[in-house]
Length: 79
Image (tube, one colour):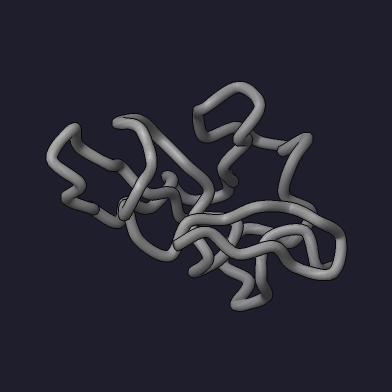
């Protein structure tokens, strides 16, 4: 199930009904989700001082799609 926060940034809470790939996690900006073609989800974390950028589909120093700082417990894009 995907969720949208107040700024319409989409994050994945699970992999039901989505294509295999990498997605922004609802756990925070320093997390991302790996979904398999079988619908299995694996939660991953970016390296220290990096955040997930869903547009580029990788961890970066600055994200275009997630505005909370690395390590923040805020929802993606909510800062």
